Image: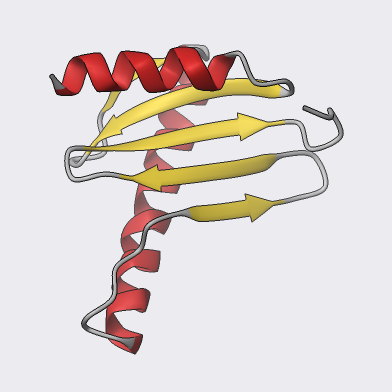
Length: 100
């Protein structure tokens, strides 16, 4: 069922305006589904996976009863949204200048 959930998340997110790419990463940091080219996927998957682990750890260090549910990073060129799940990490890269 988790494969179906991943597919549904990718399809619904892709229809949102401004989306540049979507990557689904396993808990081990391995890309399992992507709409981007291989080198871009590998770069984003590796770096964002590490960042999500650090963010989750930071949230837990601040409050052991808490957990990371969403991470949003905005730069001049892109907005990267990360939704961690028990089985995978959903990464959405979008152009913040495009209105939805």
